[in-house]
Image (cartoon, rainbow, N blue to C red; front, side):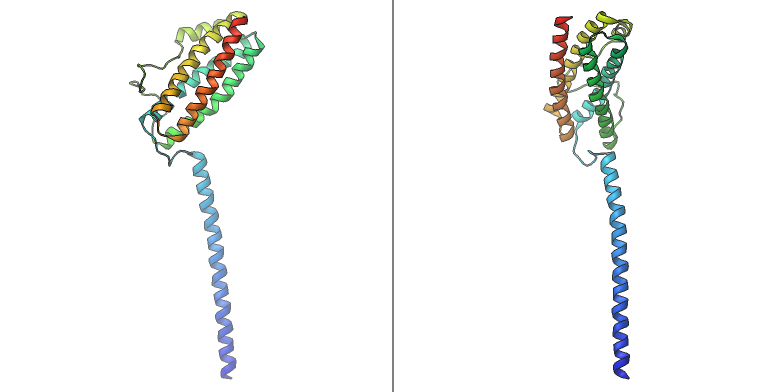
Length: 207
């Protein structure tokens, strides 16, 4: 009798231990999935949230956003106003490259707790006030009013100046910034837009 009671108690203890272990495993799985989803979502929303940054990184993003936005506005005019096929294709590539970069830089600034709008008293290390290569309001109106070969020539000339300004800003970020992702983007902008300037100059030569 005593042996039977002890055996039943032992079996009950084993069953209870197994039940507790199963519950614990289930809790870990659920918690792990929730944590993983949260981590993945946070990483996607703010890829540079945990990275270091300095004032040059912030100013680079704040300045390059409106600079890119103006280039996209210029590129948006090409499909209905340009006559040169190569220039139309280049304008489409400019828009396709710079639209996502605008989104990326806005994400950085949000993650860093900085405004996405450029402060009125902006300046950048190594530069005079203002953004290099930006078109005036009158220049943008003139471009929007042009068509055909006149548009092609004006677009190429203005975009060369615009790109050269972006290259200067990118080089300043490479020299003075500290955020690895911002410096990598600056390097890509400098390289890609230098190539596009060469293409625009070739287009100008044959117009």
